[in-house]
Image (cartoon, rainbow, N blue to C red):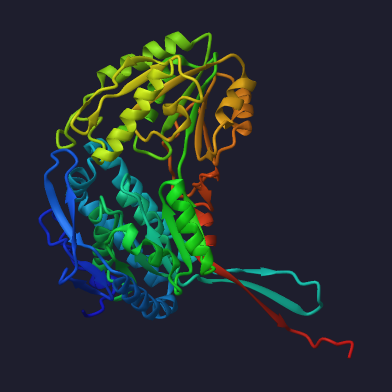
Length: 498
């Protein structure tokens, strides 16, 4: 395949009926051949939507070989070239927004409102990544030695493995791929098996169309059980960017560390939403509903537990029930749908088991709790406690356990009573009080008078405790995708003691 330049960008074939049943390795789109294939199912219809090759360890090795070969030449390209290529990806996303929306709806069960939000976030991620080459030049530091100049330069880390999840497949893949490419790295993507197109093959097509060199972005579809360890623990990997559950993340991080690669991990969450008694309750209820029920609750930074002051508890529950019952549910293909299908039967069953266990433990089922196919009703559970199944686990569904507290100290204690520390939110009309509570919550991101489903391309994104290692976006991801090199230059002759 001939190498193109950003100025020679071509129109990619991104339609749902395009031939997605291929791997991208070394600039070549490889047919399944004698490989097994993985069936991709539309969550709304449960019909076969497509299939992709089940990549092998040999495919992974070939992808890394191609990445290593392509990376050095790409790193030598000018910052302007790399910026132009990445910016072209943003332009392609904007031009093909409707087509990409259809892919997200069909493959991941994303409602149209969620798909639009995801694409816009991905575009912002890529635009921010395009600014990184100009920021990565380095610095000059003073020396303690006369006549010496200290240069601190940034160089690409090398080859970056990107392992995204299925819930926000495009955004969570491209937020790592785009800055990696912008900063001079090559990439090997192992997409999620449930969403191999939107979390991998689509990204590969976009960067190919933007004119990056062959082998710079490689995509190996396959089952994590077959190739995951090799992707994360390959001898040529320098950074592993993973987003997913904490149990899987621990294994991925171990594989990375064993090769001395840096593990950039965004893992699970159990987001507390603290509503103080002086909050604007109408606004808090609206934001809380958005934070619990967006994308069926399949969001790592969604609200997992509502912690509400006892004096406004009943009114909050009543308002949240009203919001839950008014949300349109059903197929993601219907434009009006807000709460669509859960990704698969296993996830659905897990959510319903959490609800059932929580009710059996003494919580009150205020609304929801049932399902129609993969569509789980928006569910509100009152009289909940922090140790009930839907509260102490990352339920990853449209489920809202509501827990009362008596004072700020108890609210913080409840909020922190989890191994996770990803995102949280606090509602109060007293900014100083709200910030005090926010400061006391052990989470990487806390939002005052807003729900926690927020992500901005220039702001560090990541968690504490079991919610991850490192940060995505802006200067944070630049540090993780580059290596600092100290070069000292003795400008004046220096005397030595012997």
